[in-house]
Image (cartoon, rainbow, N blue to C red; front, side, top):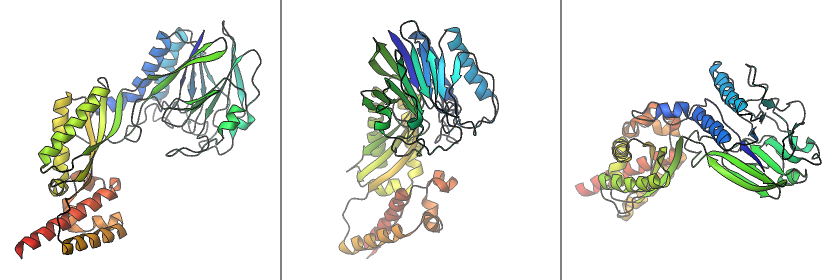
Length: 409
């Protein structure tokens, strides 16, 4: 039997975005998360007694600020050397030869595949020889189809292709080393270990073509479990392709339907219920969660009028309920007031909605009345404005004015 780990996109020392500057946020966990995920990968490799480890690009997150990033990586590779586990890597767009300007000598168990042309590296294992084919990125942006130049499979070997690629395009990912599934399938390899796409995807089972995803989510758009893939081979055929979790801080977006609620305290209670459901599904993981409040409700205007207060109330309550395991990364307003306006008021609201849609963010910020109603978090960082949220705030302000004027007639 043959066993190996396929990982990718370690992004060592990448800053996790969305937690800085917030009192009580899990900043220390975030700061060390990518390193701890690599430590867990090494522990898994040793525990499972794998024959080798593959990393399909982006071990690093770009040029090192100092040598500590490289030294940490070398220390982890040394642990694998002591366990007699080889490591084969290709460079991706973040750790391309043109991007990483520093270098350190690596342990002899680590092999970087060439960035000048496709290279085949053979591991003479006891059960079955393994031929690993791949090419590293020479520069940060590769637009050529690298897979087209990969060699034919070696007879008598278990053949693996390694590639950092967007395939034929993936939402949220730049197009690098583009190719089609047919390009990969036509090579006749037994397994393709892909990197660059940060969500786990099995693209084919004949042969197996797999994105393992990144080992640690870095922001709220990289939600869910993250880790690597443990592959088992029997008699020269892939028998098991098993995802294994490695992340230490998990991200999620939770939608909370607050339709019909009248007060902000009721909204907080409803949101806490959703958070408790998340806790039950995540086995004690630390989490950073973005809440999206949706639905028509009486509480809309009070929330929109002081969204910062609602954020703070939710953070305090959730911190208490979760024992500090869960942090509210942000609260996004997708609610609307209940439809009980007169025709005149409804027409006015419709006109405002159209007017707001024609404005850009700068115009909205410069409207002094609205500026004073924005949450402190937005005022401190205008570049992070959520335009949909700003429109909700503007609408809420108009509704409140319309109601006040109606009550004075």
